[in-house]
Length: 276
Image 1: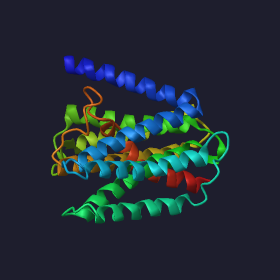
Image 2: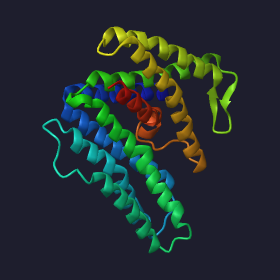
Image 3: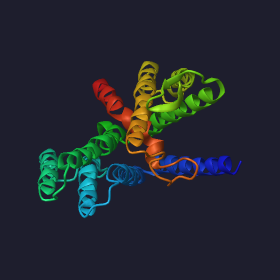
Image 4: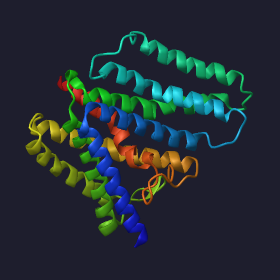
């Protein structure tokens, strides 16, 4: 009972802060998700760089620089008062940073330097790039779209919650037992149906996008969001971790809460870019 109460209170606080940050202003949105990016990246690096070594501090530093570079660049691109100057060579700067990770490992005397570089670059692709794309989605066309950000989160939460409820009540057949033994086909299908149906409500509330667009975005969420949940489970299982952290009482870490959202963002961004 105490666990349920703790989980409920944490969930309400987390949801309130997230929604408040999205709708308060473009600046609070950017600040909120920059912080979420930092914390998710911290949890990711804590998982993959779990071994103690003299070079761990330097690797953590490089991991944060690589992982947050796309987020920082995207903020410069979409800054509400106008694009920040000096970003013309930002893509080249990202490549230079990746090369810098290789150079750093050359002097680390590590037995597995390529594994370390791969872990750092993966942090940029898995955490940094999706959150950078979220900024581009939020400011598509030069205007801030809080409804779109909120709706993508809402679809993700609907899929996760419905899958959990249906799985708890009727789940029998494991979906992917090798990676996530508790997930079931019944729960997954329940999440799919509930999320696709919920897209019609979003089309009514936010008619800026058509019913077909909301349905496609909901389909992207249920497909790639569900895969994102499994991908994070695979990551944690590879390093023998149950949760990404204990930051959110009763929920685990931020990465545990944003794994589905992060993974579906590139596909949602691709669709929204195609629309324009």
